[in-house]
Image (cartoon, rainbow, N blue to C red):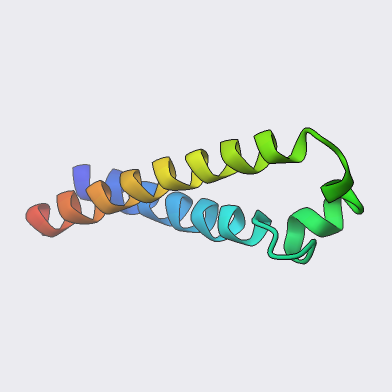
Length: 74
């Protein structure tokens, strides 16, 4: 039962991680550039990028811990 829950969580985490990585902007490209055109001219984007980076790191760490937990349970 626990493996089913962790496997479902792994799918959700992997999709979330892909979306978060795509939201990072290289030079106003990617998903964040599409959703916020001209966003680099605003002062708040540095804070937004920093928070997006923190959220991405947190989801990546949870993803890693979940993979390790699944490895021990299987």
